[in-house]
Amino acid sequence: MNKLEKAIEHMQNQKFEEATKLFTESIEENPKEPVGYINFGNLLMHLNELERAERFYNKAIELDDTAATAYYGLGTVYYEQENYTKAQNEFLQAIEKGLDQADAYFMLGMTFVHQEYVKLALPYLLRAVELDPNDVDIQFQYGLCLAQNGQIEGAEETMKTVLQLEENHSDAYYNLGVVALHKEDAALALDYFNKALECNEEHMLAAHGKAQIEQALNGE
Image (cartoon, rainbow, N blue to C red; front, side, top):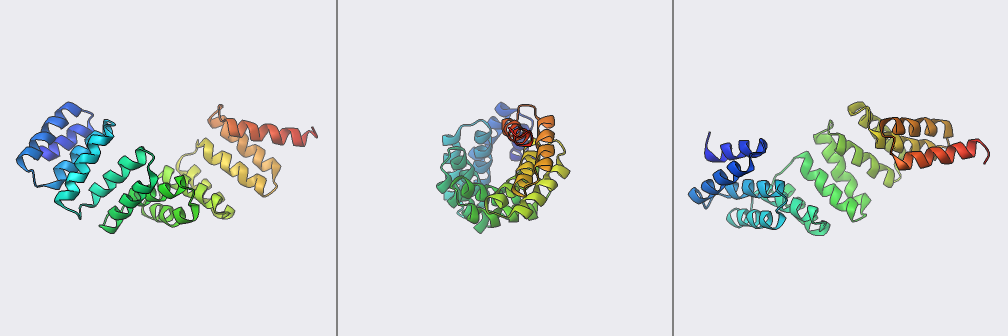
């Protein structure tokens, strides 16, 4: 195991000081290798040192402008800073440079969601689902995006998939309740809102939806 591999192992085990030391040594010994800068950038992201991470990713790109994971790292920095337009550009670059991974498509889709371009987000979130169908967060955000695009049947099916992956997902139950209301099935909606509250008794939206339905059913 070389220094870089050992440093990555330390980072995964939350041994950040040891990781920092080995990453630094690796970069000093191989200053023209972008992978050292990318991994040090990843460590700085873990430590929430975003501006320093940005410098390391940029250095990696300076050394190799085809380093897809450096663009992905840079996109993540901008995403954390809520600079979604810049993040979008970096995630696009990462994909164009060959990073065909679910996370890249998911993050790109989410930059469009945050900019309220839900139609543009949909194909990227769909691609993320295709690449990693068992990721709960990806499935859930895809389901929300389907709903925002008026694809109610697809949203309903996707939220049920979320529950197959995580049976106590309160937000999936809540959104199924909203779908049921859309279909004018108040009894089913009430059942879903109750299930959301069983999973999370502090789910305020589900509690509000339940109260509204009960008032309507009681003729209040």
